[in-house]
Amino acid sequence: MEIKRFIGGILEANCYVVSASRSGADAKAPALARPCFIIDPGYDPSKIIKYIKAERFAPEGIILTHHHADHSGAAARLRKELDCPIMIHREDADRFREGADRLLEDGDVLSLGDGNRDVKLTVRHTPGHTRGGICLLSERDKVCFTGDTVFNVDLGRTDLDDGSYAEMVSSILNVVNQWGNDLTIYPGHGDPATMKTVRKINLEFLEIVNDN
Figure 1 (tube, one colour):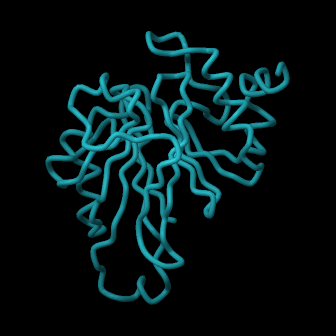
Figure 2 (figure 1 turned 180 degrees about the vertical axis):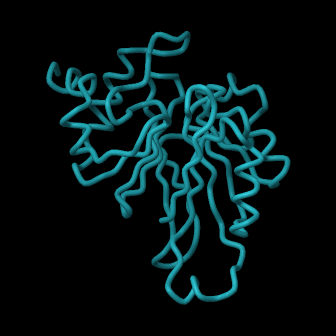
């Protein structure tokens, strides 16, 4: 898996462009259009479009981990410019005003590529920050894009209108805490971290796990 991060806006939100890794032969051959996913484009659509075109990517979808504008603000422009669908969990669809093309459910598998170098992202519904918050898990690559569910040092806030601390607790205990220490999270804000690091320095995560 190849991951390109863009950081944008006053909230320094992360957008990721995800594609299958190239083999050695592919890297030396003339570039062919390769499929990719765009995760959480909140800002700077021009930079993302420039990168997509320079790398000759063929986007197969824009995946939103939740509806907040710092993660979804550039999605409509990218859909128009790159001709690819927007995907969001069913529980967040009514709050995404631009309209989604596909509604996601827990357990859906989103695939790119072919053979041994493909990318498979499994949708895990992790409400708490929003009703329809999701994480995107690649078990083979030991990577998860966590949106605003869990960061390296804290958790997503639950005091907004469709947030729920009780649901966040459930998401942490029943989903996030089930991941192995060797899995790396790519959060909606801040730097990536292994779950081993999260279990050492993320005090909000530890409070939930230790109290339950």
